[in-house]
Amino acid sequence: MNDNRPIGVFDSGIGGVTVLSKLVEMLPNENFIYVGDTLNCPYGVKPKEEIEDLVTKITKYLLSRDVKAIVIACNTATANSAHLAKITDIPIVGVIEPTAKYAYKVSKNKNIAVLATNVTIESKKYEEYLEKYAKRRIIKRGKRYYVKCSEFVPVVENLEMNTDISNKIVGEKISFLENKKIDTVILGCTHFGLLSKDISRVLPDAKLIDCGRPTGERLKKILNKKSMIASVNLTGNIEFYTTGDPIEMEKQIFWFDKKHEQTKKIEL
Ligand code: DGL
Image (cartoon, rainbow, N blue to C red; front, side, top):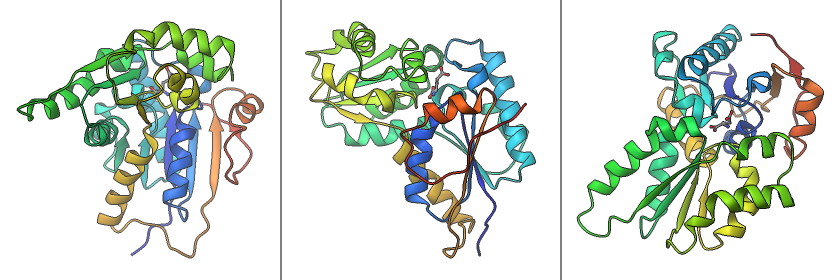
């Protein structure tokens, strides 16, 4: 059985497009509806209630578009999404758990740094998963570092990656991690995949893990299990929506190389 209805994907802004990019590669027959809440970006410094409210509004919009599943392509929103189970029973896939699990698996020495927004770090979601996995080991438990990096988000939204500005902001924040023998860095904010070069400049030996692939694997598994995969005869379509300025968002996603419809404005 197939289900050709679209998959909803959302983020506070354009960071989630890094996740969408992987989803499209892994599930080329699927239709996607992406919502970037650029009007309200950044989420990572907002109070919990406000984030929950924004997450509810976007979810309701996506449900009104008859999506078959939703991917929360935002760590901050994922950390504030438990209430969605009361709103819908379609599959909701967050980024945190699959990414934490995958990163822990690939790390050899279990010295892992998590770079995320202030709200995500304060939610302790990554910490819950990683420390639970680490406790299961008898020796070589390694050490984890949880770093609040909300300052990185505007750098990406303003397209200042790989510049002197990004170099300085990233360097000031994470250079204390040098010499800590970190072999794995979790990009615990979907915007940070676009800062990979800046982060690797400070931590050249660490493997950077972004949320796209692990989240895509999780989504694929769920859709397969529920017989909800789109027909192989379908060429997936990608729609983009923003709560902000569509022309601005088109500029911000210039690097997204998959065929897609022109970004449109929505009000939530
Ligand atoms: N992209 C979002 C995340 O993964 C956060 C950016 C923001 O602060 O809005 O957490």
